[in-house]
Length: 188
Ligand code: ADP
Image (tube, rainbow, N blue to C red; front, side, top):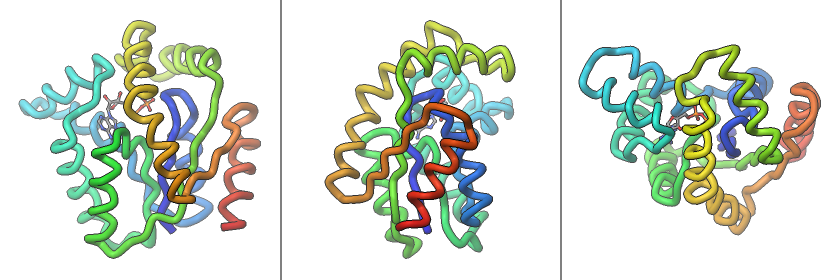
């Protein structure tokens, strides 16, 4: 099984992604995590990525494709992937289609985590205290949300038209949200 986890910053994608991957034996691909790993290196590319991520903008599709292909080739024994934070715009959705075709995998569903905007802000500002991510401050967050609503949200309709969309209420306890996701995946 191959899945996309879609949702705004703060929707809980990372948390739910690990749980889904455990339950359904999928390999987690978080482009955000992969990019943050790159920024730990002091290479020019690492620095370039850091400045983009810290400003809450999207890294170029070329860089994303390169790190994705690299990750997939290192995990070529995976039974399926869960894409978290990718695709984030229409062009990336096309790249994912191509990528899946190349490795002969099929996309089974797109899980959209639905959370009220007010709650997103609260969750992220709390996360800043716990994790200290440079892009979790109020000003950058505003930009990340704007980028999400302008570029990523339109994908919801695209996947709905392809009959792949599963909309999940992302509010409530982590375990409740997880149960909602599991129930809909089991009935696929
Ligand atoms: P969140 O969903 O909470 O914003 P992520 O860890 O998914 O957190 O992403 C953090 C940042 O990494 C994004 O704001 C963006 O700068 C960069 N990023 C992650 N995934 C992508 C992607 N697919 N394309 C471009 N940039 C990305």
